Length: 196
Image (cartoon, rainbow, N blue to C red):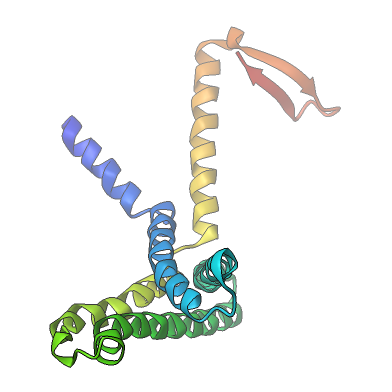
């Protein structure tokens, strides 16, 4: 197998990994936070920096809640817990869709119509993109719920550690002088070693 194909296989495995799924969900959450922040800022009862702080806190709390329950759904150990977390993640998803729709409709329709009193300046065609985006970002985030599994991540880590131990044992068999025995249990069954 050529070097390029091996590299491509490595990239494909990395993109399909649980870590990549979490990373993509995290990026989507940050994207979602921007809309939540903007809407929270508009409706804040505070002024100035306190309004900005409250909006930032609200956006982290609400969008972070979606991410939290996405991860919990994928990591639930039994059907009942998975169903519960899935229901909560759905509620957050619907709320985030509402926030997005409000943001875009306000920006494209309400502000030109009611604030600027220029009905002719409404860019209705922008809704063709804005509405699907409003729905897709939270829906795509929600779909990660079944894919981000802490158990799978732990299994990946265990396999990585197993390969590392096997490599060190193979190295020890070839070069026993590279190992230093730190301690031995009373039954001579368990050794704590350090590789130089």
